[in-house]
Image 1 (spheres, rainbow, N blue to C red):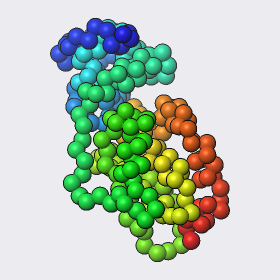
Image 2: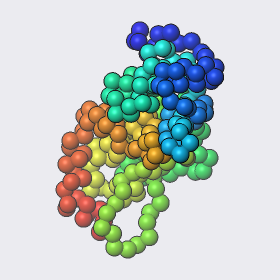
Image 3: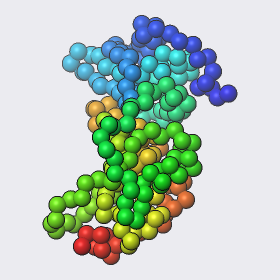
Image 4: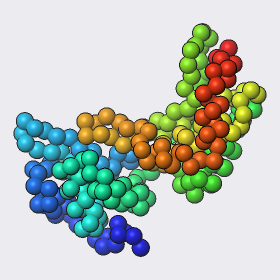
Length: 236
């Protein structure tokens, strides 16, 4: 059992507030949430001398070590040691985050060359132990016109929906590339979207990049995307 898993005893929000203020020396405004994506966000209010902290309710069960790390991080957000403890706690208790239902609208998964559901199910089983619950669909085909770039995939946290660009459903595109794009967007769904202290969303965090690089076809898929002739062929 890891340090973050020990002493998981629920406290009320008032006690958590008092513990964090005592440890950090800051005047805090704390809101306990049941967010389905952002589990922790901080905003400073220098004019009134307070720090607003929004925390997922999982932190009501955090052990003393996690509370101390959180207090230290509030004082010094650049502290890697405190950040690592908090990140580990969040990863181990992500099962407490409320799952968003899949969108009700019709999804298009069967392409001419690739079936997204088959790819999704395979990737989910191999790399996420079947835990990702986002929906997936081919995106809408764009209107005709000259294009210089293409966004291969996207993940909407509000809709819990992955969209894959329909141009990838082509005989010229290798399956390993489509599978990698599916994996990339599923990783977003798996890790969630972080927010900085200013409220700006951080999409490709250091943790995201570290995990993504372990994907077996990462280098091959990146090389395919970097080849200008492949992009030109897609955009014809």
